[in-house]
Length: 550
Image (cartoon, rainbow, N blue to C red):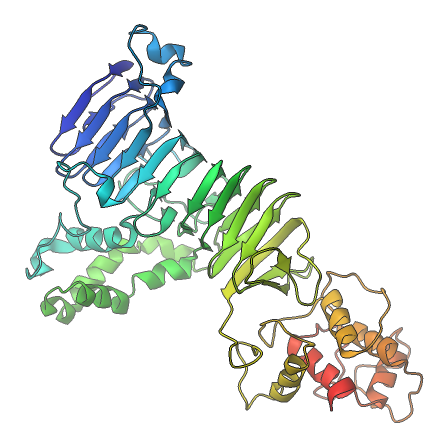
């Protein structure tokens, strides 16, 4: 245990449990050069409360690699970097540094863990990992380090776990959820940079944040409204290929992810919610997990035990959120960076800078169109060359809010239909006809609203010509739809127009609605036209069907 600045050169720190290196200070650094910290029977390789400067050194833990608390500050790099750090070499300037040695942090649970050890919500744990291998792969551990399983510390197969108490149950389910994630942040603010890192998560998760109450008196747990007051989480990826998902389950604080220069991120990025977190710990899910892992059936017949575990996974005070306040991931693809989407993802915002690239394989991207906060669809082509919107020419650089990405269904049996469409739906025939005609060739939901530019492009694909009279990214109103119809068909007559209860006749768009209804292209609903209402994709398909495909 270190309480003052300490220097370790060419040494091995060994422990059979919990902590080859432990700091007990909030103002001291540990400098390690060409050294090793190893915990062979569980626990962590290093417990940090302040600063670590590690050059060409390795950390191996039976459970965790680096356990970072409070405002700890970690840097790992190659041995060569020690030669440029005067403080690191100040106690042994003649030490023969192995310049080629890389830093390694490996452990089966998590390579990096962050939690709060003090009741200070402004604390930020910081880490810069350069030219380093971070791994939760068991094969990267030395032979003398026992890789503990998620349940090794708590249960033995075939043993009745009722007697183990709720504490073991909480730990079991919690560990099961996070086992193998490369970097785990437990209700804490953090700022990390990964630069030329070899990232090797065993469960496919690069970065995971969770809600936790450990330790109960010093947790970084927030109350509603505090998410705007704390620094949150930042993660920047530079110079390297990073394969794995980012799972932001701590809905109480924001996460900012940047894919920077010469970096590529390949995976899903998911913003969790209060509802997601509560649902994860439902009685059905807990019971299913126990069955999957082969534990005794007595547990399943004791609802009190499951409820007791749930109460500790979902604290009562958390119900104050009631799902109304969720902080998600803001992802920036900077110049020279690439994000390749591999599956369903949700973001508070997506920023694509000039020179940034978004790729994917058969996925559909929904982003908001503007002030209306409604969504437009983009299709990312399987060849992964560029972002192709089948109704809008490109996903231009900029910031898009409330992004949802879905995997496209197999369309080998024909053009893809709307994901929520059944033959009994009123819009089934027009939508199917528009898709088969190549007018609508994206995958959408029927009640998703349409942007002006998407509607104009669809009408032009059907054979019409429209002028540039609308704001391209604004949600299309039903009054604007009538204008597009008149332009596309060159309508001039109002003879036989339908009367609508909400149109007096002196509105600026009244004549266009009259001409469109006279031609049989629009009919309104409930006796009214609802001119200010938005147009959905189902409604647009019906109009195009009436205009060109009947």
